[in-house]
Length: 148
Length: 148
DNA sequence: GGTGAAATATGTAATTG
DNA sequence: CAATTACATATTTCACC
Image (cartoon, rainbow over all chains, first blue to last red; front, top):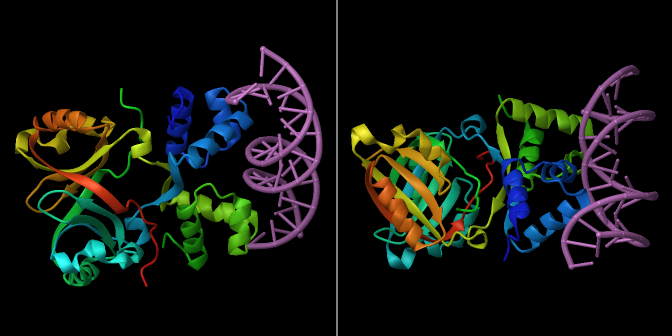
């Protein structure tokens, strides 16, 4: 399998919690030598279990005061999912294609309501957007762990 | 402000892209000395602009084959947002309180449909859950950058 | 913000259980 | 064959300009 044993899961937990831990520090916490840890982490990266290491930014403090969940009901021929440029739009923090009534859901973050209004206009070219403001996020992110 | 100048934004871009870059490497890329970079990054952390550094995990490869967007319509007195334990449920990767018709939206990740069914039953104690499967995610995460 | 020296951390190769 | 030890290189962290 991709994640071999409990030590791998322990390393994944530690790196999800703090991606900047040194191999030395990791080695102390899992009771292995640094080279052994480096080798395990290298394998977890190669196999794609670890897809990357990212600093997370506080949206408010970075000047993004309005964040919204936007659900698209697309008109087939102009579907937003057929627009490759979406991936490059800096306002789009997430884009998920979903089953059911709607086409896809976006997490969009902008400085304020004026910019959100402009963004809604931009989406309207692809279909009918429906916006729900995110008021607060009790969980913005959670570490993936083995489920009992 | 929290982010002082273009060099801070450059550092944020680099650390969002790869949180494990050394101060030395960062210093080379922004043309500053390593101690100057370490000091700037320390300030960005202290002020809360950088909220953390996290390894991202591929859900499929970690044994989570079913991920869903669940929208809750809660019955007031038993609202899910009043349940502090939600934050500890390992299936809940995100939880957002939203404006509009519904109460909150969860991103939930489980090994398969059987576990999703059980999770829906768990949520039903708080209100009426509505589930949309995530079929694919063209954007799972995006770096925050200054908007023009 | 830069420099330089001491303390840590990393990468690699040879070696062991 | 994955983990350890040993050692050369690179990075971090001070004190000070």
